[in-house]
Image 1 (cartoon, rainbow, N blue to C red):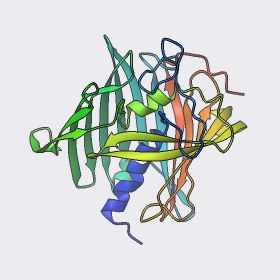
Image 2: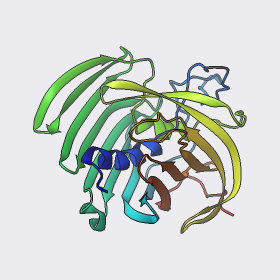
Image 3: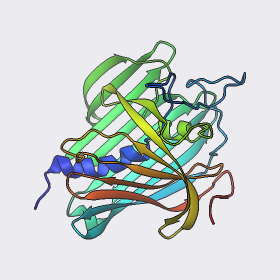
Length: 291
């Protein structure tokens, strides 16, 4: 059975997207309890990130796996880097398939996002996507004060074909900044079963999701890393061509000051996918969640 190219792309892009699933909410929906990062004055707002989890030089690398039938294929890797650039953080993400997987579907994806250190909100974001024969250069500049974003898109940096201006909601994040913001969210006040909405701007529109908090899970065995005390979350998915009915994504993060995503698992309409943290360096804090 052969997968169409668009589905192959979705398989890898899903792993990218799921790694960025965490978020924040300004107001709860359907009675959900929301925990947000503290402001300087001690209140709560989605417009300010009090960074206590990461530092310059942090580097996280994940192995990406695709399961088709009874076989787990080691598909590729994703690396997340934090770079200090004066009053900004530069987040760099590189996603590539292994040479042994390139025959099936070759991926070379590059994400770069710059955020204000004080707020954690994106100033500029660049995506350079090479997935099979698909190419995308996506350049975004954010004017958070005016609630606008300018977007230049094309097949490459020297082949820009679209220029757009969009209105955005206050304190909008992108697919990269949301991860680092969310690692600073205080989940301690959430109860099992609570859910909270998140929103990011990507591909010309705002994407809303809802995330369920599933509580603590002790002794989670992480391949090649050992056992950890974790907290587990489940982002909402939409059934269709990619996800089967009743599909649930599960994400485990370290239950310590680093808030590292350790494992992401999800079924697909065809097969399933998994991302597993397998090496790290430059962490701000010792990993106390490891048993």
